[in-house]
Length: 338
Image 1: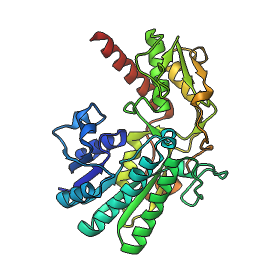
Image 2: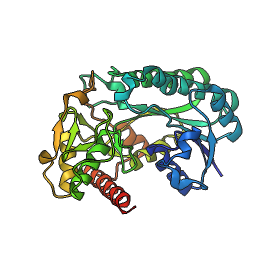
Image 3: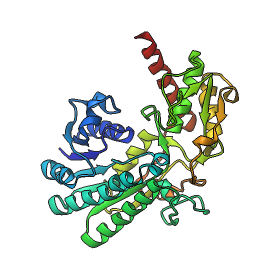
Image 4: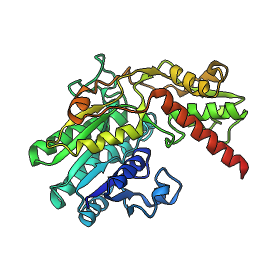
């Protein structure tokens, strides 16, 4: 039986990946901070099916202990401070987890389990202010926020560790991927939440945004720049690409995305349209929610992943948004019944 270690197992991607690996017969280990595991999270339903190790990606001892204890065949490094917008206020923490945490993991594997195959989560945010597109594995990086800068550092170390030590480390340059398991601080989930509130007639929500205000206030959802355009796919498709990368003969870097571009306006239209409402009656743009420096239009050229990995997305943009809205309606209805 193969053994796999997932850092960041409590997150959206970690939970979908753990499910996939369990279906394939793996023994799955998850590295998580104690407080993260003890609260409700995306992988809560997997308790008893995976083995949880408690540790912090900012602590080298915790990482080394997890590698030595599990001796995994595959390692999936998904742990991160995952909020690009919030990385402005948490720049040092972002670098420690997203950048230095990855290096500590690679070093632990080099010394304790050098034959393990490693997946590292890079990000389309690394392209940042690039003016060329669509983006592929050869597109230059131009990070536009501290999150992206830390990801570029770790991504470069993937190549250095591969070439210097012969480690099998593949990186996935993942474009935006969402699901019904996204936390509410992500704008896509806020939109799904706003549509769910509108469908249920909730004018003032209990849940708050990053400014400490209700996500929905007086029947309106406040967002930042509605013209932001992204390549959005469903997380379950993307974790399948992660697994496929580690089944190849050679470690490499792969762009993963749908190749289809949508704006926040499109997302609002899909979400509110799913509950047969006109989004313009429920959404406003708030300048206070606009980032200081915004990543430009990013669109994936995933032709390498399609050719080498034989990977294709299976869930459409509209299906993804519909799943998210339905999940928020179910959550709000369950809360109201208590």
